[in-house]
Length: 105
Image 1 (cartoon, rainbow, N blue to C red):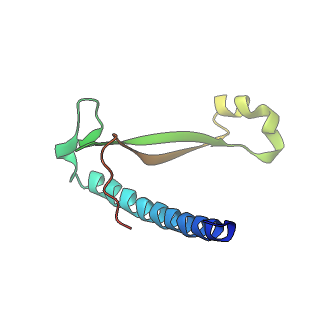
Image 2 (cartoon, rainbow, N blue to C red; image 1 turned 120 degrees about the vertical axis):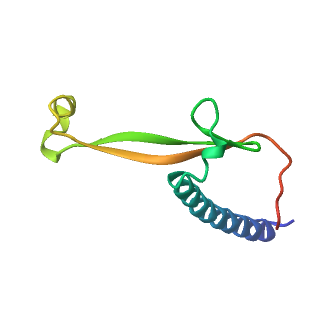
């Protein structure tokens, strides 16, 4: 494979990755909806997450703080007195154990 072919293949693979990432986002959103509807209750495992075949998934939350621009140096004080606004992001963490990949290209 020459340099031009390699670059073209990289472009093609990167686009495939973008497409797969977009599809993954849609699928995880659908899975979150299924969790909300109770459709995954049969997959609840002993740790409170979910297990399906060789995949585990659970809801995760991340808390961030938004500070007023004038008091960046007072972040800890704003957290303590609840002046800072708390943002909590909830997302789905999915892990798939090593298995034979079922890829279609």
